Length: 416
Image: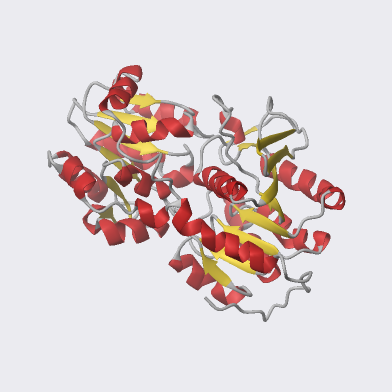
């Protein structure tokens, strides 16, 4: 079986450094890579077309069954606080659509798997790819405009209606649409031919309590000499970093340290906000770190905070609890689903920094909170690749036997 995987963002595990303007950190990158690698190990041959960044080879093999192609047209470099660079995803979409038929003629594919980040370029690719290639398409919605997405700028608000219409068309074009949560499955169901829930995956072999030596080494490297309140992820508006800075200003205990693990297009703005609040001596921003270092970073924290404005899934919550670190977050999207089942007392109303601070203080004031979290049944095995991804492999086998898709109907509907 040969699969063409179209995703603007994809993790590059062989990269020790990653320019922030090329969107170095994010759940979509990690999940597309984890899916692809697991399927490659099961014998599924895949060709990935993604953005990448300068310095990466145009073509390289991450596995005998996994080839990654950097699909990107050079553009003038203008910084963007939403995407890192203006035109980043547009360049990928154009390069992909211009070359995808030629690529498919050279290497016939059985099906297409497109990944949506909620932005218009990826939506356009998903609408057009199955008809350019005449192959059935699986569509994973990493961020749904119809379900959880909240526009992040004036331009985003102006084009939100168009993006919603394109998402409906992409759903109608896909042979199967894959939601990460039950909530999104319910929302997109009326617009799709068929919906399946395949959540994000977390490898229990990687995300388990690290040894004390690894944790101490991480703390020494970043000079974390007190209790740590952590934020792990992309430094972007939707992840709620302004709420994290405000939270830090409200937590007046001078012994606390605040750790931001990650990078992103608004890092400079975050650092300026920290300086304006007079918190430079208590904040550490690591920048990009390799994924295999994330467990030690999570375990170095007394509590991890997820103040997202919207969040499709929120896999950091599972990763943190798997290493024994409690999580506090806003009750949005996937965070609400995960913590709502496992630790509802650690959820705060969206946007309410005061209530968020109360939840964080409750964890900090309970010396055994970390021990209690570690003793609680870990959710990680329910999200292990070997548990979740056989369903995706079965969908691939099913789709590979389908004929080319017909034009989408505005009356198409799917069953969940």
